[in-house]
Length: 185
Image (cartoon, rainbow, N blue to C red):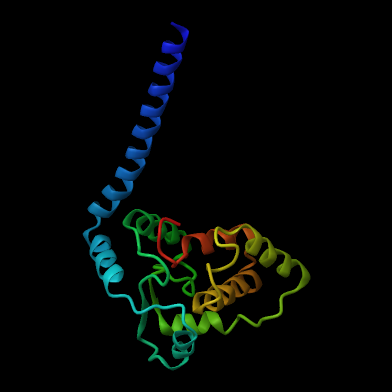
């Protein structure tokens, strides 16, 4: 009798966990559904991106017209749930214009500006904040590979640490929200 009771209890726990996940997933989908513009942007960016991890693409950013945009994911397909979380999460940084508000739609001029800080030498404490972010971000750096995003978001981090006093934890938050590799993050 006890083993049946244990099985029922375990089954109930699994059902509650699944229901909880469905509520969370539903909230993200509902948020996208509540914002038809977001769903439309997702559709456009996920199907018409120009971003790649190649060295040639990285080099091309320097000559892109300032108003051109770097769009889409570079490694894996975009996912609506994650895209919704990212764009909603990045709104807390909207007062710092160099932080792209959409990690899958970045003006070339912003990418160039952020990348220009990549070689900035940080002070000892500033470097500790950067090193913390490298060790603790989801990708263990600004991106999953050393492509254009690595340089752009690495430069962005140095700028934010040096000019805005960001901590390593804040850089981790920016990098994790700005992950443009695609997938579920």
